[in-house]
Amino acid sequence: GENVEQHPSTLSVQEGDSAVIKCTYSDSASNYFPWYKQELGKGPQLIIDIRSNVGEKKDQRIAVTLNKTAKHFSLHITETQPEDSAVYFCAASRGAHNAGNMLTFGGGTRLMVKP
Amino acid sequence: GAGVSQSPRYKVAKRGQDVALRCDPISGHVSLFWYQQALGQGPEFLTYFQNEAQLDKSGLPSDRFFAERPEGSVSTLKIQRTQQEDSAVYLCASSSTRGAGYTFGSGTRLTVV
Image 1 (cartoon, one colour):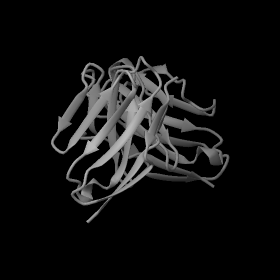
Image 2: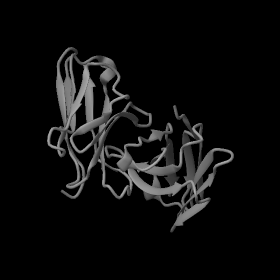
Image 3: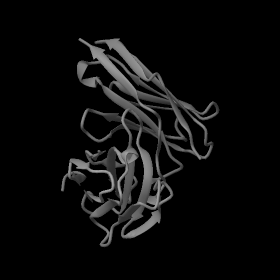
């Protein structure tokens, strides 16, 4: 089955700096890669996703890159703010959720943004 | 409703007790998933429903775990004879046919003492 590794497990940055979180996956059939933000006591919230036919996707201060050959993808957050502090999870899936394809999650990265 | 609703938010069970966790998905969402999240880890897949049909239960850790969605809407995850290792947050997620991604509920934190 799929195995997703995520690094680093904790990341501390100064407000305004950039943060980068990296993930690798093992299943070459995976083609959908979402990122989730989880705040204390809440469920994971989808913040951005990328499909295998695209190498990069950007949404305001958040961007994700995908290298299918190397089987790794990364989350980039620019101009970090204290409210970005949370646990971030990467995930991989073989396809659409409506077809029942489950997500395999990484172990999470605790991001702390210091004001 | 506006989001996925799970109840109870917290549940403390004595070892050996049975528990039932409820999930109210977003209205009209066909797909429903249950995940288990141990402390400090990522969620792990338990089971999947498409409408009332349970199409994948490969992630259920033992036969003490049972899930149902009899009318294709509300789902219940039942754990029989709870053990300490069952302590975790149980997350429910639903998705529309447009495959726009999951919406997770806030989860039920189960503590077995």
